[in-house]
Image (cartoon, rainbow, N blue to C red; front, side, top):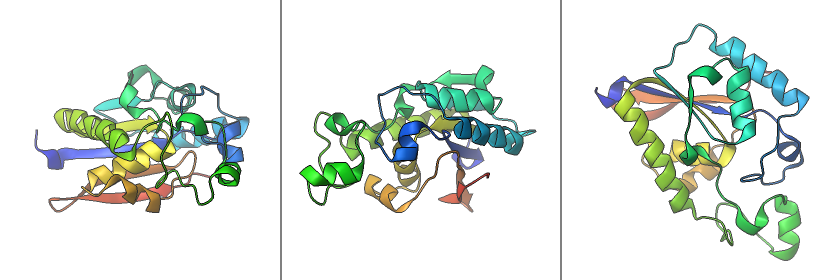
Length: 193
């Protein structure tokens, strides 16, 4: 199947207590808040009637729960490559808190001690893209803020740090596709309030 027949739908999980507080959440498995579940229901309404050739979700509860409430859980396959960027020792901490110890710290430009690099996360993102290219059609990806931003950067063949310029709210829907034959971000950070 030609790559141009592919459209990726990126769906960031709904709100959690940690996303609300700004705490970096990667491997800690926490559920959605009530507001996060309400946002997932809005995603279900938005996606109603749209068919997907494949649905992939991060194994983390917040992504799986969003996928389930959005009505696609029975079609979904777990893909570990969609896990959030591994923040290492900064897991559970906010940027403001981390900056008390490491002035100027940024998830995008600072080492994530005991975590992973942006390039390592980009390798995972590129594997997801390759899997979607093989399948073709419309592919839904339920995952997390930083990995989806990195995936979007990889899609447009930009360095993973480009994701730092792509704000992505909880429960937001974005699409990646083509303009003519060029990979493009076709819709970004659509909030379904």
